[in-house]
Structure formats: structure tokens, C-alpha cells
Amino acid sequence: MTVVVVTVVHGCCCYLTSRYLISRVGRALRQTNPLAHPEVRRPTSAFLTP
Image (cartoon, rainbow, N blue to C red; front, side, top):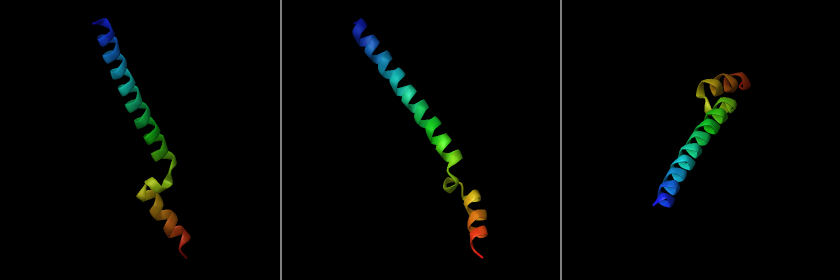
């Protein structure tokens, strides 16, 4: 019985940690990637077009 509890707790911890890491990595990529921001992409395209 204790093995089942440990497995469930471990699975929940792994799931929450992976969700947290994915959200953090996605947020960091969104901040560093200018293509993800249309308001950032518009001035650069307007600047590149003569």
C-alpha cells in the first residue's frame, strides 16, 4: 500500500515539476524571441521596409 502512495506522490511531483519547467521555458523563449511578439515584429518590419 505504501508503494502505491509513494508512486502516486512521485508521479504528481514529476508532473507538476515538468509543467512548471515547461511554462518557465516557454515564458523565457517568448521574452527572448522577438517573432513571438507582433508588436515587436511590426516596428522591425516597418524599419526594414524602405
